[in-house]
Length: 418
Image 1: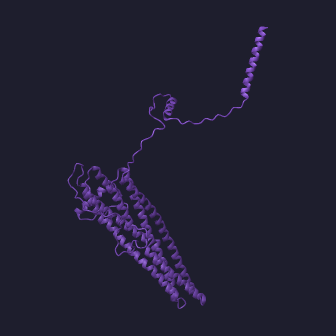
Image 2: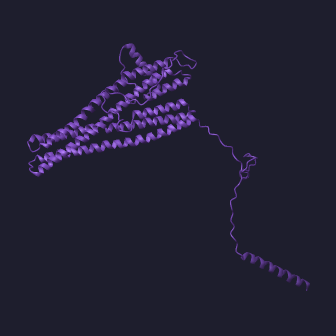
Image 3: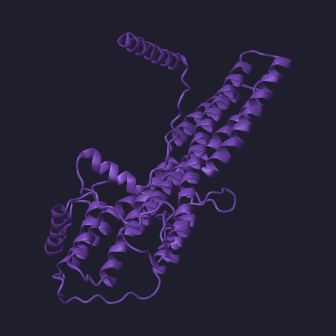
């Protein structure tokens, strides 16, 4: 009897427990949200060590706290560097300006060339049609239209030949290239060493010299397109002060007078061959451009006068049509062939060789070559600018020296680039 009571008691208690468990399971669970807790650098390092199985891989900093205030870092930018950065921004802006204006003036050349040729050919066609037995009002209309078109072409050609859009575009292309070169030079100076006040002054003078050599406006400051004498372009500041006399004795750097003699021979070759040749070609291109610039408006003017007398004889129509065709040919040869651009290209090349002569002479006179690497770097820069290797540059100097002894003329140009 007692055992039955005990078993019934256990059975009832187990039923009640199972009832409670079932009730607990049937209750819906609330979603749990885990909020990310920011970990301190110390706990993060500890977790990395424990995760990888290492206990002493990453050193633990004792005083690392999230609210630790870092000491302010002092700026190391000097006043000269700040000024040089300001000049760098100005140079970058000038690169964009000259690039955009160069594209615009190149478009001027194309649009004006096509427009003037179309006007000239249309006027010549009208003059020819007017002479083909037309009488009365149609003859007057064709004569008047042809004369007006030839007159308009004459005025437009005078303006176009005065400003030379192809030469203007080449000026801006050269200015863009030279400003990019100056920009790279300033960036290199800032990257290699701390700039000084002399670096700032040099960059400022070079920027202003380029502004003067390649002006942006047309009125008042435009470069003269038809000077009396052909002169090379000058885009660098003139050196001021008397240069120091170069010591010719061999110093502890290992540099002797051989490098100086080599550079002097290179200068002689540049003067006798490269500079002379480009000055000759520049003068020739300038004379051809002057002749073409005068011939175009003159021919359109003659065609305008001939078209006014169409109907009073066959000679008037012949003069108008022939002069119009010749004017279109001359205009195409001058501006389609971009003779002005060729003149500017020769100006720039002659200026490049003039700059090479001045820079080499100044370097020979002023540079002390305190390190042997300075002489090697100087020689390498000259060789690269002339498109030669170091061995080719030394061979050129030897040939020039031999030509002096033999009394002959060297048959080789210094530059292999252009």
